[in-house]
Image 1 (tube, helix red, strand yellow):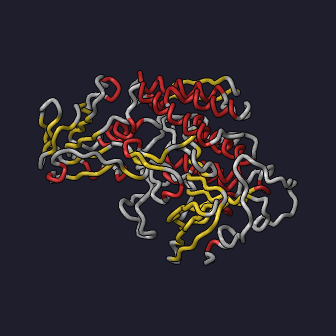
Image 2 (tube, one colour):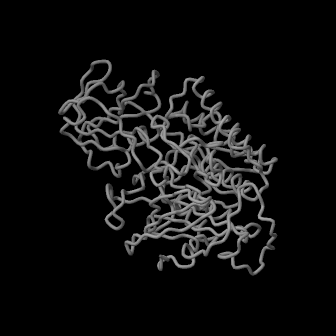
Length: 476
């Protein structure tokens, strides 16, 4: 059936032929030519799953004037607005409007741990009122995404309140089954290309400890943390020393009786997080009102917050997609360059890599895949891509990486971006200034007080140069 609430976006494409990835259709269409690309067989139909930062980047690049006539895009977004994880809601659990789990993991007092200069799309700047700060609140990032979407009129391509139920490969096409949550009706559409942009910060990766079920206090994952007030005058244990563990710990310490931070990093970070947060080793066992740690110390605890990261969520992908899940690796594989489905390369995943610049990386990935679809980049054959993927896995294992960290770039970010740029014949460079700001901010975060590294303010002078200074506390 055609979805009446999304008419003109995702309904009735007819039955045009597809275009193989890496090959042009053979028909040239001039920009501005009046072409009905719902029925034109030269047009590739593209389904984009998610209207967060990566999905918006896809919508932007695929509708630029020079390529717009070659694609018919639809963006499926299960909520009622753009922004993905940057949309704050005080609600947790199930969204009463959609009946789906709340997607956002945003909490009220969050500030970014990356400077905004590493979180922008090429050519589209944050408002000048933010020139004197680099680390932003979630609301300022969301406003940027709204302004970006409005500037390029991207909402016209988005089907809000539409959740993708399944993606199936059949007869050399992608069959995408979608549910319109407003009218509680499902329908199926056919696409040549599928781009998955649903993020990876929404499905909690919960650990298991002996005695978890016996604990009589409050236990949540950081996904459900919103404000510190419920933890007032409590002994609170945070499990995990990632960004959320540290930041939520500092958010709660203002109201809690005592905050404990459990982690397995051998070095203590007292000088970075201060005296108010007591660091403890890994959890060994949980009792009714206490926790035993690996050093056999016992501490009375009122609430536990598990800051243990997230799983990738690709439940809508059926086995016909040619991917498999390795639970230890937290995602679907094999992917060429952590981006393209090795077995059926007309499917891509934007934003899989972690610990990296964000929006600029999305943009490089989107443009790389777009160039593959246009035939400007020729992908290796399936066997070669699979072989390269296997070699990458072996290399990561040789470095002692845990499977759940295989998608982390960190110090390998520049090489990753350089590889994509090289394969694109030098057409996808990331400005050196952005890479250097990322490097500098990371160094300060590691060596400096975690409460103060966000005082730094960066200014990009040109593609190769930047300046920075440290704001006084009173200026924040």
